[in-house]
Image (tube, rainbow, N blue to C red; front, top):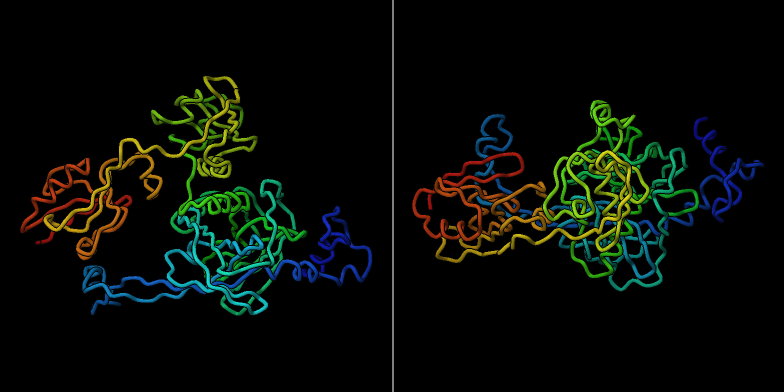
Length: 460
């Protein structure tokens, strides 16, 4: 009954031609359903099979409720092949495909299957774990079916949508629903957080990377995650907006091997009711600027601590994630029109969107055989390094870019921040190199991993 009502509400005589949507006028229109739309869009949605090699440790204490945590790093790491199953969307006739990072990231072999049973090998052109997006190129592809991108800012709550993908590996499947929310932030995806479209169209494991399309067959989002307690779809799914996908495609075609976001160089927080009353805003909206980097483009445009950012390019921003999304869509090198309360007065100013600066110089070093941990690659942390490795924007010190074979055995990991060696603080790669060259016998190190401060003791 619900499906019949939904069909009656959704059909349009000219929905595929871009004309105004209207209620169906005849039984033939009602029975038509979504079939013509699916025939048009489904060929551009693909199944992706990916393999990656990971290092795992085999411990005799695995499964023990007490000792498995004490001996988590016990044993030599061994390579193991992991298989990943997901979906993707073809975006151009020459075989550009978008999918999720968690489907294809770090993969060594990617096979893409079309619904007409053709198969292609693919390579990753650009991937970003924070956004959970990846752009692929099908090898030897020509005259491929593809979906056009629709500007996601034109999407409204209540619009009818279809989710197309390969849930549970059963084959291509279509589910219908509506857009149930816009600009959802604070939802985790991959290792990052972003801004999403919300839909009640059922999305299940394997749908990741698949298409969320409107009734004209245009892509409005890439399905990425669900909100669930049971592991199945409960009617709340999230899709990465097409506007961000378009920026990824532009950078991939420009030859970038990773995604570059404009650098804000500022700290901010959402304006709640108490802050709105204190700032005399009338209602809680916007992002309060709490601190600005010396080289921040927002500082150069005239913003100061205590000001409130309300809009970026005419679109409201109410969380730092929304602001990062808006400048990411605009891209490096563009000029964003930013509206805010500056010094207590409403103003709109141009902000030049720039890449994160390499200041101070990162001075990357790889330690040689004479050091205590040969093969360790370290860099000074600057805004560009912090952005590349998803560190907090106020991070400082020495970053471990690659631990090397010896460092991996000792428990070091890429992205760790080195704080001290043998009880002496290290703040630059020069200091760290000198400290490592003196390592002998018993060694003590302090590293920061996320919010954890880890003390490591071992013997060389």
